[in-house]
Image 1 (cartoon, protein in one colour):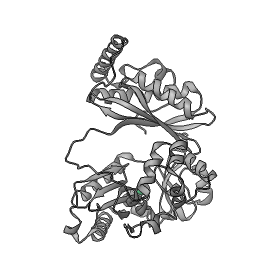
Image 2 (image 1 turned 30 degrees about the horizontal axis):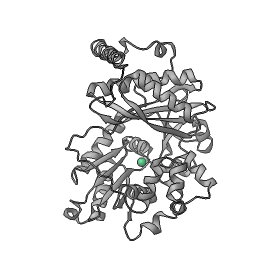
Image 3 (image 1 turned 90 degrees about the vertical axis):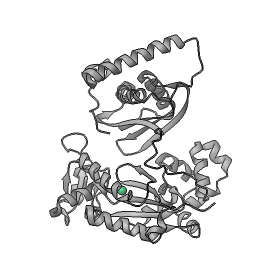
Image 4 (image 1 turned 135 degrees about the vertical axis):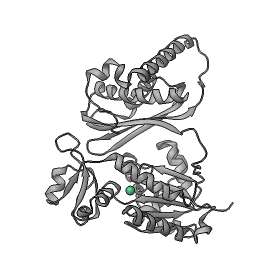
Length: 399
Ligand SMILES: [Mg+2]
């Protein structure tokens, strides 16, 4: 079968670049987008190239960044503006293909297998996209060009800003295998640590680990990753014209205060689960798998996923299984900055086998439908679980 041609387009220092495009007078100054120093979110979220050269790092406190770079201009994030720029980038992509898959606001995969020849080949098309974004939006992007999604993403990371990298069937082993394992999407901080202990530092080392060792010591994701690194990645990119059911529905939040105890975590889960549950029910979906992801105040990531013993769509069940999952991987020994729950393997009906508890389940689901109706009529805040009112941990729409 003929190889696909995939581009991964990644906007460089997206938030900071958009701010510099909006305020050209800042272009030659070190600029960072940061939280509000008066609240707990007083950290650097993104920085431009000049700030980067001063040593400013994403995730550090504003005062630490200003120690290194006293004239650093800190700007509070303007999410609607970044969303607008993201939409404009997508409009440019749509001139070249309808197979587009976004990741966050600033990254996107494009399948240009059928269209590259119309624009002088993949490299010329990538250059066109870079030029057009630069001229129309005043920001730069890096592009990875490859035969699969994984390598295209790696490629966009290799040269930046405003550059493009080809990872082909011919050169992928030479380019990819010497890279550190952390450079790949899917290998988090904790797994990297575990792999380092096994003397695995590069992606080449990773491939030397026998498949059964990966299967027994890590999640199934790693086994899949191994196949992809060997060049067998058949992940598809869906058309923007084909309405596909979402792969997952999730919600995350950054808390206003550090959270630590089980009770604080549970309250945050309730907040997230209420929203996810409403979205699942609005579309008539049930979730058959669930994942929870935690980020600590020191920017360490942890997460786990499970296949659920039954199909769920109530907030109560989402909280129950999320909490059970957290208890499996979290020691409650570090302060938490943000939590995300995602529900996966969505089906349009309840796949659960009938049980003697079905009556009770039906009652619960009727209650949930009634709650949705009340919220629709009187607003989201009209009815809430008591735990969300008693603990002021989260604020709406910040995730
Ligand atoms: Mg980016």
